[in-house]
Image (cartoon, rainbow, N blue to C red; front, side, top):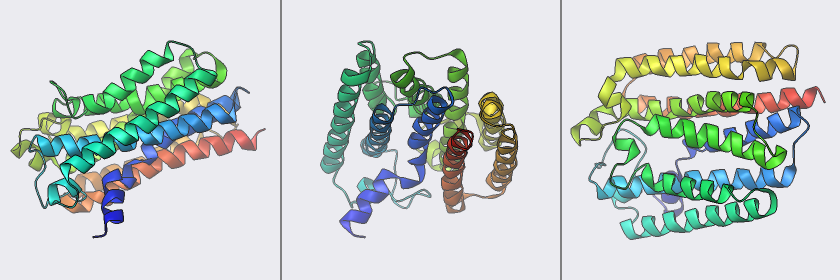
Length: 293
């Protein structure tokens, strides 16, 4: 495998729609309320993408250091574990990408934000490492899904909207939680697939703690709750807006069925489909808003 492909694999392209979806949804909310501003939205999009790549790099590095990854695992190839990337190179890449994200965030807040966003940015940067490292890594204590709801739902939607509008109404927060639940489902598929490997090395993900059966039902419930929390914005965007959340629920239910009957490597496409369904949902919302302008 070429060096380029190894690093692309380490970015985990299947999961990147999760970071984009929240900012796209916030932009659509800005359009809906006539508060959209292109430059802060683009900077927020870049920041979110860089932060997720840094998080993915950090997760691979720290899981390797902790002995939680083994060669030949069911999920996507881990470059450090397989010997394709040196641990030092992965740590350096994590720091550089996170630094680029922080620089983008500093520029964004300096131009459009308030002082309190700097501490928020520091918390996000710390969250990149807290997910996989530190004295109590979130991903190893069944809190990975909670972290995703916060950092891929509430944070990108609410902060992006604040940067454009200057405030964050309660209904923006509610819909942001819905987007976060969609993102959490991507991690559920990942941990559902890896439950046996994670249990063997003492990694206590939600799928390990509750079991595959229980976590699959959480996957289903998350999708239904996400559609419910975002439904009011769809109805406000277009008279026919309720149709799309209904279509999402049907598609999500179909993925749930596949989650229940697949195992091992056969779950890898389902991870990407869950992420893409989330991205398509937010893009469709943006399209619905634009169609009514």
